Amino acid sequence: MFKKTIGEIARFIDGKVIGDSSVVITGICGIKEAKEGDITFIANSRYSPLIDRTRASCVITSYDVKSAPKPIIRTENPSLAFTKTIAFLYPNPIKRKKGIHESAVIAKTASMGKDVAIGPHCVIEDNVSIGEGTVLYAGVYVGANTRIGQDCLIYPNITIREDVTIGSKVIIHPGTVIGCDGFGYETINGVHHKIPQIGVVVIEDDVEIGANVTIDRARFGKTLIGKGTKIDNLVQIAHNVTIGANSIIVAQAGISGSASIGKGVTIAGQAGIAGHITIGDNAVIAGRAGVTKSVLPNICVSGYPAKPHAHAKRINALMQRLPLIVKRIEKLEKEIKELEEKLSGTSAYNK
Image (cartoon, one colour):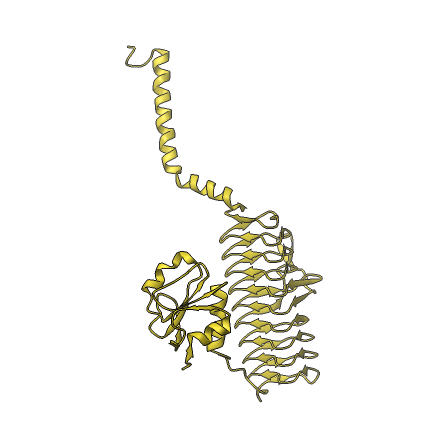
């Protein structure tokens, strides 16, 4: 168990303590679950009432919070500060493997950098290059002519097929497949003929790829994942897709072939992107959106087919009122019919 004072933590995260800085912190937890001795955080000042109710011994806050009934550390970005606090209190939470396991099968033409670790039952094919400090856990397959950079973490049961290029400081979680064939067929007389997929996959530096993600190789050219992009679990990225730097792709999203995703784009959960369209830089695709046309930079779209979010919200609000609107229309139709009967002299009133 670690023991750090509030003052020590504040100095590390460059925060300002309000209250007793000598209080000792022995744990980290969410604000609702925290107990005495824990440090926690609130990212938004509107949640300030939780400070009064939490049992935590210290709360990391924004500068909007001026005081509290317990010690706080005021920071510019509480979420980032809390992340740094975790790293400070829990250094090296994962012990990296060392050495090459005797059950690993490594081609004679493969090359390994300094301090590369290869776990049990890994298979490394011809002309593979693995950079210094990279770790492959158990059951990883690396196809021929693949290049993996420095300080990567490749977790168990991952398949990296031939002719894939992976940069440095890339993290890939279990079950992911990189470089599988793109889904391409030519249908003639009802028979599906496979189109060869002879392109490659390029993953740039500092990318993190979640569990059970599939990234297809290009038909020609390359499928590209830009530097710093983070991909959640269960995402499908089809052939010839390009994703710009520092984008976020959330779980169960699907991106169809040859779509071009800009820099800093957020694609939320279960969103679907049609093929051969462009998503502009810093655009946001809301959860479950179905994007059938290109999206301009710096806007948020939602719904199906995806529309600017404000417009989609108005449509959704009207959809919720459809039963009332239908009843009103039926009532109006009835009143119009009665009025027409009166005017034509056929109503019971005129008889």
